[in-house]
Image (tube, rainbow, N blue to C red; front, side, top):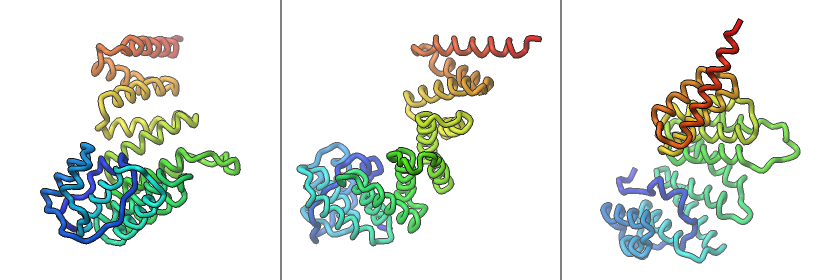
Length: 276
């Protein structure tokens, strides 16, 4: 695998997907490629293009150059088709750039086709996972595939289908803790929206919490949500543990009073249950 830096993971979701045809010229040095990615991350497109040159030749540099081109409007169908061709060509390689290109190709179909080609995107995610199951980009694609299943438009013909099951099955293939956390969280939140049994969705939210790494605001929200849903489910010990944790970690936040009142509900329920 090339040691030249490749697509930063933070950029794979944020940038619009269009580019112009690639040519052949000297590739930038590793330090220059790092500089180009830094410029892209800061939306300094002109600087990134200047550093990369008009037509870099190596695969990592081509990918960076293509992402730089993606950010330049206007978006047209011709540009979308050009992006498809370049990603398809880069995806032929059995390296990290190939995996990244295949992932971006799937995202192009999912987000930039009109109408969105979710079936085509799903097929590309599956193919990438089959070819390179341990690649970060294949793992990320599996999460995107699971989300497609969770949030796809309802089909009246399969109204009784288990919407959570495909995403739950995908968990067995997800090796990266952060991606497992995100998928657990999405399954749990989808379970709430789809009014699934609390006993089924709560373990996903608890698993997301235990894997950790959430931002402070998301972590605070999750702790309260698990406490409230546990109380509704009659899991009083778990509810009490999460409410106590909230008050320990966020004693001055506005929800502290409400959490204290919920603790009082638990105390009264336990008193009623223990009464003769």
